[in-house]
Length: 162
Image 1: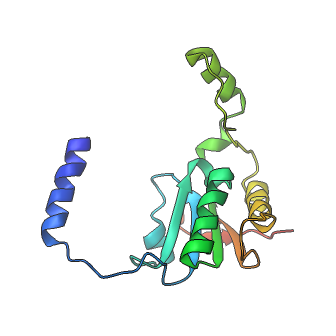
Image 2: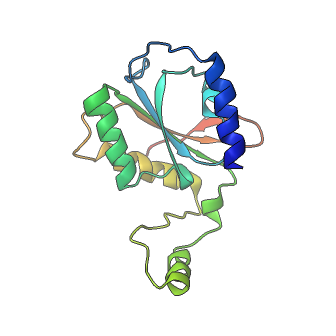
């Protein structure tokens, strides 16, 4: 599979022209979303190359590493807005923190990270919004909005932060 990706890159590079872009996102926004392969964020949000920073992980949850990336995005590269996107039918809804214990039993070492599983996607979006809003490392925490992407309809539904 990796060979196929590398070959695709070779074809891409033959037509590639440097767009002369800066690393700073044009829209000054960072999008945090789940890594789920069903989410085509640029297409779903009408984004073009260079419009935003995209930070993805399992569940789209705000972890310490997401705060690290957002801090660099804001402080070094000028973003201000944060858009959080979870989605329906997320795999984290079927996992539990017991997953860490199972890993420890299998490999002999407990992961240092939490699974961050959840049952209520709206509540997890609220928790993620709160983590962004209360981070002392971020310079802009007012423009933080959270959404749930419906994998069957393609629609975003905004989550009330209350």
